[in-house]
Image 1 (cartoon, rainbow, N blue to C red):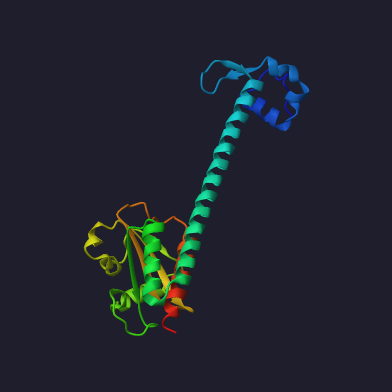
Image 2 (cartoon, rainbow, N blue to C red):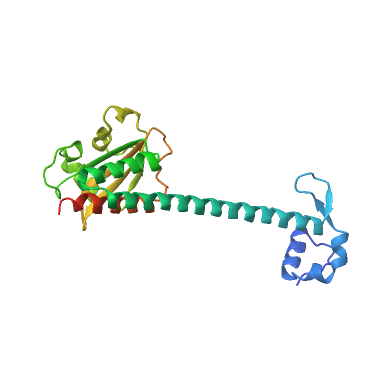
Length: 224
C-alpha cells in the first residue's frame, strides 16, 4: 500500500498509487481545478479536466473517421453488388455462347472499367472457333487447378499474360479467376490493367468469385 505522505515517494510510486486507487481524483475533485498538464499541441498548461475533454474529442474524431470509412466501404460494396447484378441479368438475356461472352466482356470493360479482359476455356467445351479455345499448357492447367480463390497482384503467369497480345508488356497487375464446372477448373478469366495497384494481393476476392461463378454457369451452359 502506497501513501502520499511518504517523503521518498517517486513518480512511479504516484503512478502505482493512482492505479491502485482509480477513484482518488473523483473523491478529491477539487484537485482537478488545481493540477495542470501541458496542452498536447500548444504546450501551455491546461487543467486535467480540459486535457480529458481534449482526449475525448480526439477519440470522437477517430470514431467519426472510422464510421465515415465504414459508410464509404458500404457504399462501394453496394455499387459493386449492383454491377454484379447487372452482369447477371445481362448473361440471363444474352443468347448463345457468343452473346454471353460479349455480355461478360462488355460488363468487365464498360461497367467495371477493366481495360483488358482475356478468357481461355478447355476440356469441358466442344471444339469451337475463337482465341479463347486455343490450347493451354499443362503447367497453366495445373496452376489453375491449385487456385482455391482468385489471384490478384503482379502478373505471375507469363502464358496468361500473353493472352493480352500486344498489350502484354504494359500490364502491371492482373486478376485471375478460375472458371469451374462442378469441382473441375475448365477455364480462366483474366483481367489486366496498366495500373500497378488496380489489382493487389491484399484486395478482397468475394466479388471476383461471384463473377467467376456467373461466367462459369453462363458460358459452360452452352456446352451442355
